[in-house]
Length: 290
Image (cartoon, rainbow, N blue to C red; front, side, top):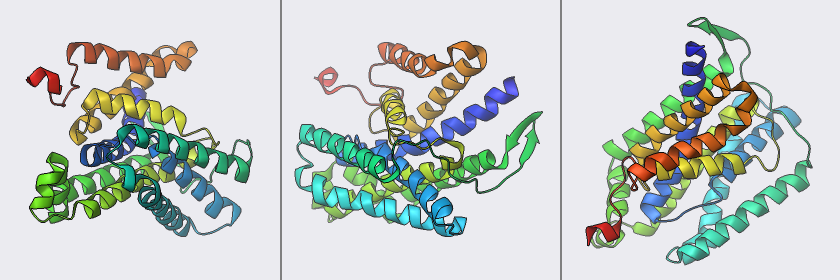
């Protein structure tokens, strides 16, 4: 049982990490809470279903098309609806919530309320520590590791990463230093949408696709980001695995109460925040500095 908890927790935590790092990145750089973030996850998953299953395209072509289209939608929504009001945080909350509902209704109109399934990219399984793990789940974990490593390299080892981190620290000073802040914000939005899209693409074959599938991960991602510390990419990464393992533990130890996994994960978040209100890796609240 321990081996099963370990393997399943790593896979679930990895998917949460992809979503949470993107959410945290856009918040840390643009100071924006994007309630439509997990809709890109949903759109990419439906993209895989459409291109691979309905149109019968090669899996690699389906992946590329789903990724490119989802990123384009993310960038388009930012430029058309968010960029001009990005200083108004309540307005952004309302706009992104409205966009999420629009995406949901579009999927409902396009595919109906049916429960759908995307084809697997790879079949078969491998026995690890006595646990049978499908190649699809191994693919998920491998892709998550590669993508998160790529994000870390981008942020820490490139000039673009330096510009992103400088903008996150102080956008006004970054602008005075010659950094094109609007361009950095647009790129950051593209990275966040890409991370959500990758998560949706790799997990699509393991999920039941339906138009409301964006809401459960959104709640968990917001909990993860708050737990890790708002704007902290490292905190989001670590907290994603904490929440992922808590959910898996509940399912393994209390099979009859598996429906409580989300509630218990949120309870863990609340307990930690009572001890450390700024989150695991966040800074102290502004009023505490006065």
